[in-house]
Image 1 (spheres, rainbow, N blue to C red):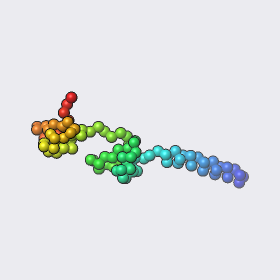
Image 2: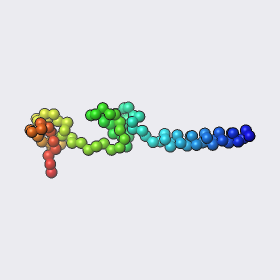
Image 3: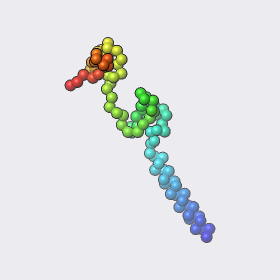
Image 4: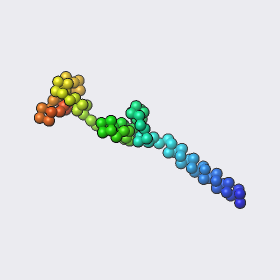
Length: 95
């Protein structure tokens, strides 16, 4: 009877350890709090603009010109930007 309990206990421990090992290898982007650690993981990206922290998946495409707030900075940028006077924003020049 005792050997049955011991065998059951060993089997339960083995199943638990196998499950946690597989989960430990999986990187949870939401658990990373440091932006540099998040950026070092290829399957994560850090959303500083919306203050959401480290998120899984690829980073969404963004316009590099949208960070320029003034017309003089926008027009002298090396990203190929142009100032949109109507919206008062800096946008990428179209091809």
